[in-house]
Image (tube, rainbow, N blue to C red; front, side, top):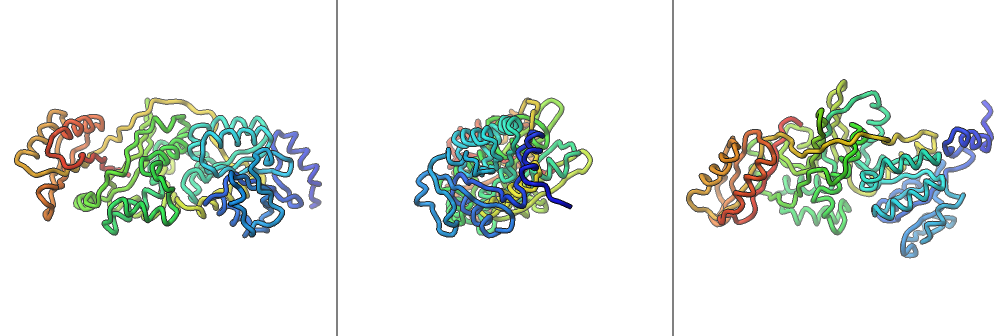
Amino acid sequence: MKQKDPRTHRREAKARGTKPAATAAAPMRVAIIGFGTVGSSVAQLISAQRKNGVRITHVFNRGVARKRVAWMGRDVIWTERFEDLLSPEVDVVIELVGNVELAHRWISRALIAGKHVITANKQLIARHGGELVALAQQHGCRIAYGAAVGGVVPVIPAILEGLAAESFHRISGILNGTCNYVLSRMERARIAMPEAIAEAQVRGYTESDPTSDLDGEDAAAKLVILAAIAMQRLITPEQVRRQSIRTIDPVDFDYARMIGCTIRQISYAELNRKHLIAAVQPALVALDSPFAVAHGSDNLIAVYGKHSGRLLFAGAGAGGDPTAVAVLSDLLAIRRGHSPAAHSAMATTEVRGDLGARHYLRFVVKDSPGIVAGIAAVLARYRINIDALMQSSGHPADRLPFVITTEKSPADKVADAVREIAKARYHVQPPLNLPVLDSL
């Protein structure tokens, strides 16, 4: 069959209101914003696959002279001027800087200029995704963000394209590879959290400041995106109940194992008739669950459909190379003329954080008579029933850890009770309150 002239292809695409993909005769020309860990990994992957019909024309970065590498080729333009990326010599802009405000400004300008855009910026998409999708449609181009959730795990295209006919009502997952690495290292090696964090930094799984990972900000943004694409509910990261993993000690893994569990950072969203439950927090999960088996920087995402039941997606969730694969996959989809699916208008809804679970309460105290009785009395006043009391031997009396597990109780009541218990003078460190998620 005779191939159409590229100019005819472009005229027809313009008439349809969409920017054409590159043809075999015209390689797709790409500009990269941000040449850090992920940006350089994307460039290396594109350079290694020269037959894919993609060519890097521009790299935009502040202090770009220090970023320049010889292996990129002499024809690449290294620039500190964003305006250079809006030239007719660029078809696609890949944004990999992470800053929300700057990325929002740059991506908006690129879309208005008719450039396709690919981003891995989960905070940007969580806060401005619907707006940017509408802007792309208005200007006949595409925005893709498959790398924003799950690293190399293709959960976004799977939900929006492969499972487009399904109706989802629940999502649960390990969405942050850094936290999963830290907690699974603590579990296996019984090392303290600062040591596990330092290892994650050496391996490139987290930034020098890991606050966004450890405190749930990163995972909350990803949960917002998944709630949008899977359940068509528009929420903000601030509405997601968050709890840091920083308070987890190695001893918690010992006590968790006593009840057949381990500890992971779990992101959870469930759609009820009147509201959406959304939370990101460390939680106890059963040792025989898929979440307990996920180690290292892996992500694991479970989506629950009305017709298909539970579906699992798993794979590497942190590091430059996995993210680069997801970015390049979006790029090749655009080159093939596919339109990577993106969420559009959605309904707003009330958000709550109560997972309706049993609770694990760990106390570290200076031992004295009446401590357990006092704690039990407070729990009773809040109508919280105790399920079990655990205390292992071998700990000093001036720093004695023990655990109380409760029956299923409202999260707010448990939190209020723990705050009251924490006022007692016998505590050596603040009590720890974690949900026990039996139904994952």
